[in-house]
Length: 498
Image (cartoon, rainbow, N blue to C red; front, side, top):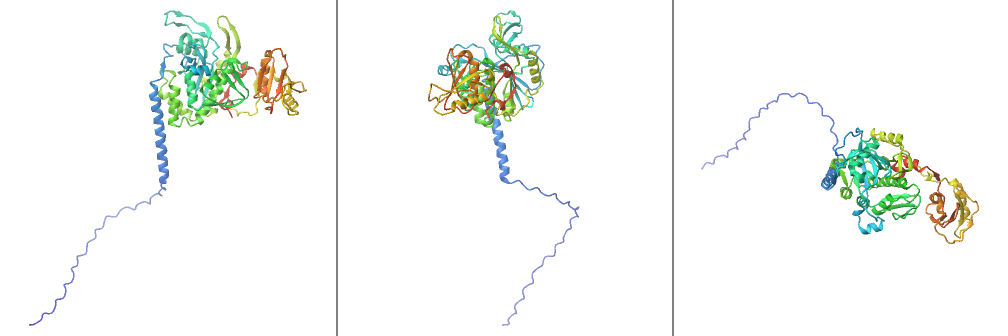
């Protein structure tokens, strides 16, 4: 058997080489610009989160105000009004505070001395001008006892025409409600009122309480037996009821209603400072609570709706005490008797026209000045006209002599010979005075913050100061005409607590 030799393995098959197809030549690509570095992811997330929060806050704020808009009691103060003043720049709101004690609980009536029947009249009246750029608020107080001429009108109750007649300004509300009030104010100021807002005691107290109280500082004790106000000198956080006592008091000094208006302006400055510094306008939940407190029991004109309220809220986010300014309409005379009306105050027509022209032209009323920390306190009687006998009511040797020298340095006419008092162990400095010299006593009390006033009949013109353990120093005072002082324009940071 023959053996066949093995076959050699077949060579591997090779695929024919592929033919390359040349693509048409492309034009040269220009060099790319340098790529910006991408923002880190955490930054993008922060921006996104912030945007969502801002949008959510705005949405909640709008929803809250929109829901309450339907609950606001509406009035029509501009009904059938003709020949109104020309509109100026910015927005003018007539803010009216009414006597709403019929809505106060019995406990609150007793605690805050709100007895008596409601008068259904205006207790406070102010024009609030918000600048066109929403960066400034000017508040002008209108004394409620201002002599006014009611414009002629048709009495809707009787159908009879009534001619113009004199009244006190606050009587316009009692006679013809918001409509006659707006007409009278426009007639007196030649300023077009854009919106009307009416606030009563209940709204006021609730707003202060929701804000957590408002800080008020006073350099002199404030005590009014009519309202129950009793504040020693110093800084205080007032609740709603206490704040109501503060803004209503008329018997803490000789300035009466003029002094009350200055305290109201001081309170508004403190209220703005509280609202803008506590995050209320940026916190949706607190914004909701304050909005409910304010809008739940006010009356406003039909055009003062959600958009306007939110616009004001957004503007106030950038407010500070220096963004607000306060004034009282300039006065020519006070305590002017008018038959059938009693005591009235009359405006200084020329100066009042100038003030309202500034509002109409949207100009600031005051040139901002930095607060003066050592500014003398305003009093009615010059210290040089006040005679003082100093007594030492403590066991501290030389205290009487030191108090006498300090009062003399402040301009008071001291005897220069301090004596020991029959009263010993006196802790709080006492001013003993004859009630006939009460203005002098109040001026002396301003110079001695925290002192106690003690009226004793038939003591004569010399005031007796019994220096107590609390005596430290004498504050400088300066006599100022109460009418000029009331008409002075100040900014919020000048009257708010420093």
